[in-house]
Length: 141
Image 1 (cartoon, rainbow, N blue to C red):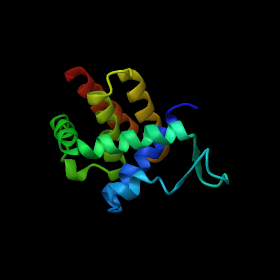
Image 2: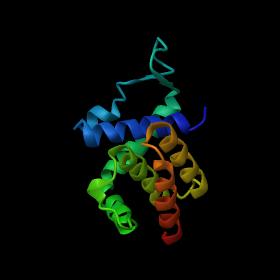
Image 3: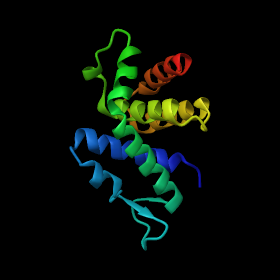
């Protein structure tokens, strides 16, 4: 299974943590997801390995959220951080975590996945914004 579902799950968890006020512990339980070791197939379903990768993305992002937000803020041009859509923020945070701390993952893969998630879940044209911000961050890391 690809890591795409892991990233979607992580993005959803980070959004719930930020907007819904879920605790990190609750988010890491991935209660909205079925793993391959659980019966039933309703809702988002991921393998146990994909769930572990999603948990790692969520935990790492939350642990480093201040550093990550500083990097995002430094790359916003003519935008205030508080005005950026919360879906877009969740995608950016997860992706910046990957760019900063997961050196074994190609930056182009991180950016491509973020663009696809933004196309599917973000507001219109947010994928262009995500692409521009992540590309500039990648150049500076």
